[in-house]
Image (cartoon, rainbow, N blue to C red):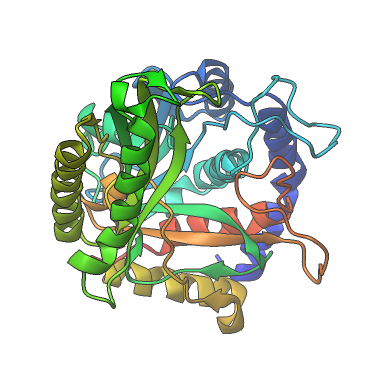
Length: 395
């Protein structure tokens, strides 16, 4: 199938896919609660005559292609939304109070539904079987990818490669960006409880001040990355919340602290967590307070397979032109797609959703005003379909 023929096929189904996207956008559901979203996806796939089933309560998996084909690849779309009140004023804005598709997962899902339409139509041309993964709960630990893998999503048939994409408001429609190696960080949630003894502010000698200990702890933690890592290595520790006290004349009993740890290196991640524990114990002894450090380990770093990146770049250049295939600059974001990349060769790229030629204000991911250009859907579908039709002698 030529590029012109592929885009002609996409144009024929585009209005149908946009309709699905707008329905999904208007009915967002939070992580692990995507029951109506999954029902919509299953109904859609069944109407197309595509075998599908539920997995991990709210996930959906579908298979397309000749069962006699030995190789199977997977395309993944996340389907959950965020706890954000939408402020776009779109006619199809969220009807669910306090919930919004502010990260583009409705785009991801509709791209995969459009991909399903065309792969089913041209099923006899596929050199591989294709597993479509509509994954719940990318936005919330422990992550839907982890649960799906535990329930066997990469088996029956065995998957040899996983492909995924994400909306990118920084680049225009018609562009993608992709890079080899580690492109996103691990993300661990950090929680502390600093417990002292309440007293009158005018009589500090009768209590134990957890505020002062918390300030010392935060300052020590901010200095930690520079003391334990190579200066050229990314490692970021942020304190994002310190809560304690309720009056000007009372020392509180306790203070709650929250933060995040992000790094591209697993060894640095483990080393940092060990040092955080040591610092917490040291401050506890120094200020005579109790400090309970309770980290929640999050997603690992996301690493793209070099060979698959080369393949995806080649596909993208054929479809979009070399000037529209950009290098992705690694970010300290986190993505549970990383779990797939730890099990099988995988590649994750970014799909431009900024309107072509637009110079106005762009609202980023997780903004209550996030509004990706729906024309990006065409290029997302084109990438997946071309990958499926071209996957021969890749791995």
